[in-house]
Image (cartoon, rainbow, N blue to C red):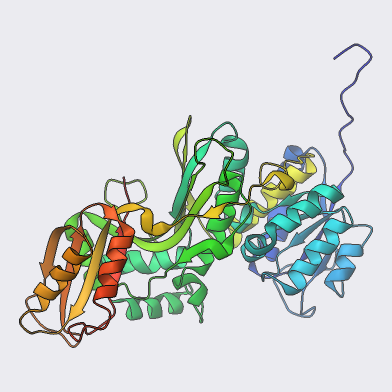
Length: 447
């Protein structure tokens, strides 16, 4: 820098917020800003002020004073308000009003901070383009893993690394259910009911227990980690409804725990010329007890990323709740106040690669298989014959001595082999009268 040059003047004018959505997280943001106002201002280098808010019910008592803020009758009013510099979207939903608000704000050059994982998973690439063309920031730290700073950790902290794999426990509800089944010995339905009574699970828990919530987060992490376009539709999803207490107990006896895991890895073909092949899947897995994810219980989230220079990085903490999520939202607001204009997915949206979807059947893995079968001679021979014909090598086999209402339970652990072979074995048994229930297959996560 020459003597004539001067650093760019820092913007010290207050950053003015418009908040859409005054549920748990929105109210948490207001409380955080009120309680930590001086600290936040010192770290942001400028004042941060809420000037307008919007929610569906203006009259509802939320336990906070809304009198200091202008009330926006519609979300369009919030996006078009000239006094709003940054829109904080906490409404939720992949489409509809939340998406319209984000688009309208970005088209006007305003920044957007969101906790909306579904919207980013489905429309993140397009919104990133709008952000970059209009000049307004797009940030979504709170969309993945609540209060854990995994987005900024990967985007900035691991910026010098080629990430080869990202995976983790991405849904607190499912993790709570599985770890409670582990500690109590209760079965899935009973544990889910208890989780709903305690508020850990929604009245309709499908998004959580069927793996959709985790898949939204995994699609975002994949794009951020590998420089690919967000591809939620490419995530293979299987939830935890079929996991039984007996599976938890057998996993424990074998030296594993069961957790719902989202895993993504990429094959760049070694030259960068061909489209990379991306594999994304959410499934219940057996995790070795010496793996760092094994002790993660309750509603905690944890993300592991493997970089070519940093090695294994792990991020762990509360995955949801008023405080943790509001903390992540405020971290994004402070970054915007400081003038951070890092591309939403680390690289410019136009350079995000369109990845091919990898064939998961070609992957080599060990698997846990559980069958419910009729209590009669020859059934075990039928199962092992199907494994033989599909070229699946059995490492160990456990058979219950007693028959229950679903028949006899038989579990197997396979040697490492192509996943497609296990699928072929299951297909060979599909119409067998010996099976009294749907088989369960869980991969064994490598250490």
